[in-house]
Image 1 (cartoon, rainbow, N blue to C red):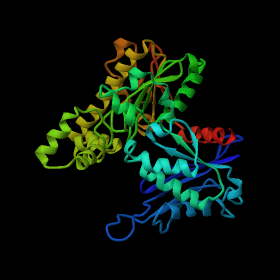
Image 2 (spheres, one colour; image 1 turned 90 degrees about the vertical axis):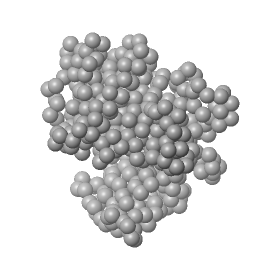
Image 3 (tube, helix red, strand yellow; image 1 turned 135 degrees about the vertical axis):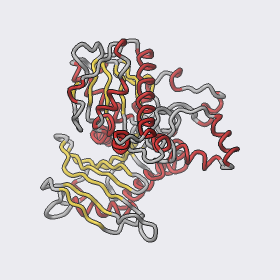
Length: 405
């Protein structure tokens, strides 16, 4: 069985076709700058594809919408020379990544007309940056790949094991009962994959491990895993809560919102737009939210870039300490995602000062741009691992389960 895994952004479409007999990636790539045409467009839309030969191909072409992007993906997948399937009949199912559907859906779900209607009508407030793009992609895929089962896989599913005291807010209970206002979390597929891999590295059953999983990227979250299940996570009702991120503020005093609305004369929509798209590391540095660029600027003496990185590391350390208290005993701390896998100095800064708690970082891989494996010293009471996450394989596995039930 072959599963097409899809992850749609507002102007992008990432994809992988996976043969589930051996979990081998047959092809992968992305479409980018979807809809960015005409005046004001910075660059031209394009598709990247890596298929049969293993050679990456990039083609600039009109991509006015996600439907056009899916048509391009299908053309490449079925190409006589570089294609990996003879036709769409060889694709068993499509798995779509969805950030958070709120209380409407809490587990992997096969798409029906009613499911899609509910997703469109009720899910957007729970992930306002992610869900509109996901819905666009799902709708386009249904149109292009008629007759192929489509499945929704949610980033929140792994976090459904949180106890009430972890997911409830100190807000009117009616808001939870009527509107589903609670902690949902995100990056669940990444935390799930890393939990499974950590169990292998520790040589224990998943049901016997306690870990702190740190998914660090442009969007970041930390999850406390007890006996192999999520018991708390840093992201909340939406992916805005928690760590300071690329453009997201993370935890703030909510009274700041009204204060700044009054001072700046802005409405709630603009305020939330600022918190989601113009805050975080970008706001702290004044230049960029990309950690790679921040490290370069810091090394050139940019004080605000240095401040942004210090705030990031401090917030990570703060959550690690909090989740050590939640778990009581910790077997390992893992680091994954673009920052976690490629920026060992950021990881080091995040755990520096925790030596008294039994956490000792190993400097021997500090100069490696990409490292996977143990990153703690032998004397560290708590092991630390860098694990290359693989959310796509979780989506593919869950998709197969859903269409087989």
